[in-house]
Length: 157
Image (cartoon, rainbow, N blue to C red; front, side, top):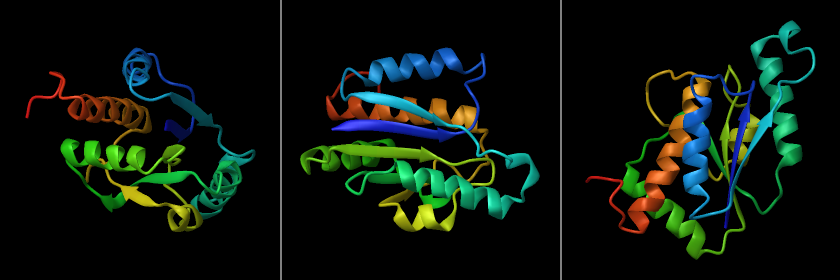
């Protein structure tokens, strides 16, 4: 199984880049993992939020394979514990899932077309989090889940 971490937006800020890189490197010991940065559509600054989400959604849906398991990070999604996330990952691996895509939307969230395509909607928090930090939290939580599965000492329950 491969973990694909997708994010709409800009390159990582210097204050968060080392952390994302560190947890991504750690994560690759368990599953092949790669980040894909999806740049905002051309003319993004000249359209409203709904139109921007629609354009971003079109880009995302074109890049997805029909067999990809899509996890949409969305504020209205389900919140899970680290242990449940570990179980979720194990279930995907046991089901011979080829790719699990974790998607971080743009500044205004994800279009309904993408949310409708999602196999799971996950909320990291009820708080509004900066996208840069969401990337770090996502990488860390996936790493934590993998250490839980291997019963390693990183996670203290």
